Length: 513
Image 1: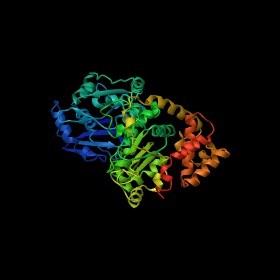
Image 2: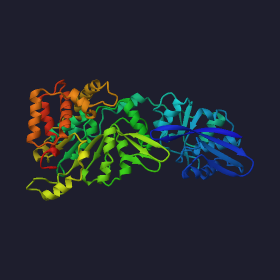
Image 3: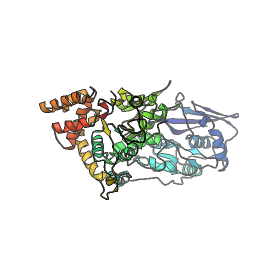
Image 4: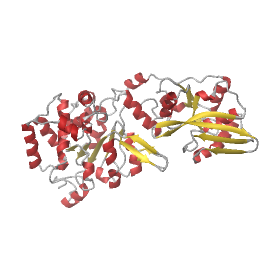
């Protein structure tokens, strides 16, 4: 007897339906074909124990199980339930009251028949709905995540016995339903970290607001304890709220990486990723034998924070250059290629010297100019070229630390940032891949960053006197455009230019030469 059951495989952030064909014939043997990996090949032991502990068995007949398309590599233990249900129906141990062909079935089996969570439930549910399946049966731990997808039944089961009773005896499994909009908007106004907690540092807060408004990459330079990490952690709280589309896109990536189980449901806050400086290039950009998203993709639509930037291996930093420009990363293997989105804001921090202090006569550790130059040279010019804003962070004086007055709340700053982003969205509506100022190319800069004669003269004087590099020119114009947008000004004035010039510290003579 031949039976067909349907599962799904995830490649990149998209799913592909897998047809599992189970054929029973005379003889003895268990033959699993269709390019399964070792985790799937071992499934017969888990399935045999789970069936036996629930009153069923794998009969002593010749079983051929084909996972189609047969030339597509399958991986992971999530096909246990799919294979088990195919075997039970094909061997006549249960009969179909409800047809298997109407459902995608996925889940890992414990030896007692309990279902363990899987990865990629959200993209699988999206694909199942698009292909017209009635429902998706999966472990209960993943049900809330998959229920984000409307228009398909999401049936979360705890054991294989529940699934067997559903198909053979029509005993219903309660569908998981969530109000996606209520869930989404409920958490928007409660950021975990708030800018009102930061004492002093008003100029740096202003700089962070500009970076958020224009989507600019930013680097903070200052001695230990000056508040660089504290400020970076609060940046997501002033970014514009997730749109529903962005939230779904980001949740899908985290679903593929298996990182949505604790929260479940849709992601409501922008991601903040802060990898350690010992991270490898594969862990940062993604990859592996079966490619998984890296930190830059997990930071999609959010913030990637690289603390102590010069301590990262140079090879690790260099592999970020292409994703920073293209806002996605493509991982190629011999037989397939996957692409993960990686549109993130890069926030980096660094000490100005190996000892942490620069030009401070009272500093406990003093570095020589040669040591400092060697330390700073770990950051390549091409990478620095992709960072629009450089700001020096100075230690907070005692009187600022001890004052009771709280600073401006993140929600107030976010209103200004959101208004500026709306202006930019309207401005770049004719361009498919440009949504905010940081994404502007040369063509857009020439069109939208025009200067009057006095502003142009100011910029020329500043570049000559401060010895700013040529790469600073376009960056200054982009940042000035964002400052103008925050003030709802159509024209870029001299004030906007002069403020933008302040945010190019590392281009000045004495840092990189």
